[in-house]
Length: 370
Figure 1 (cartoon, one colour):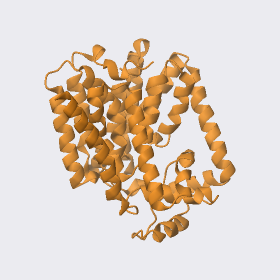
Figure 2 (tube, one colour):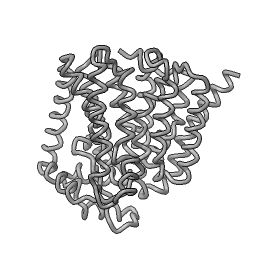
Figure 3 (cartoon, rainbow, N blue to C red):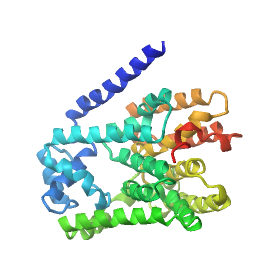
Figure 4 (cartoon, rainbow, N blue to C red):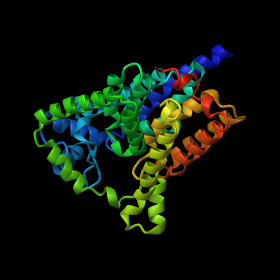
């Protein structure tokens, strides 16, 4: 029975990427991949990768229907990731992109040291499948986080350098940055800071050499973007809509409160702080209170889910997680743009699963990486 289930899992994990690629092949222009591909095209041509008219022209050449361009709003240090896409035609670039994202998930599973019996669940985690459906860059965030958790003790410089992947969406990790800054200062872990600064300077210098005005172009597109006027499937966005949709600052209140909580949370646990244990609630809170995120960004919740899943002392915790994930998978097929409830559900599940066992539930998954 175990061998049969193992081969079934292998077959499912093999067929899912093939089905996703086949499905997305005719929808190359409908999801976020088109913005990465267009930016890559312009970057390798040493043009402005944030230029709305030029991006729209490239997207229209692929049958992009909307009249407004889909512009990538990630900072310029993402360019080394999207540049290879610009060297390929759209479908070939899509295959490369999906393969790279799948590689990030697989590498993260290994880095987090998930037990073999749980590795198939990682690929069936709703945010993971959501990132493939949206053709998002979020798996790279998970890879950066997994590298940090794996090497933050044994190779702090490498762990710091891996933070550059998480910095592709820095707003998603506000509480994490606060706790990390406090930990580096309190424990004098300056090699992590040095690794991050070195990678940031090197990549920033490289993209500036290719496109000298790229930083000004990025600031211009951020200033003129509609980020503050859009609605997002997040609890802060729901709070803003419930009170007054015209008051942008309302959506920032949960993040500000979470930052204060993160500082207090770290300070109270500073002496025994372990990122593979105390850092897990930080990730849950920072995603839960993020004013701007999608279900694909919730792939970074895989480490806390894996941590609690591996050693939970609570009855039915695994069954509850399966039910929550199954509901998310069903909801994903209905509308991934309304997945407001999933971060809250996972946070409540994590609290239940680790209750009365917080010191001992880091498990073999995340806890063993040194």
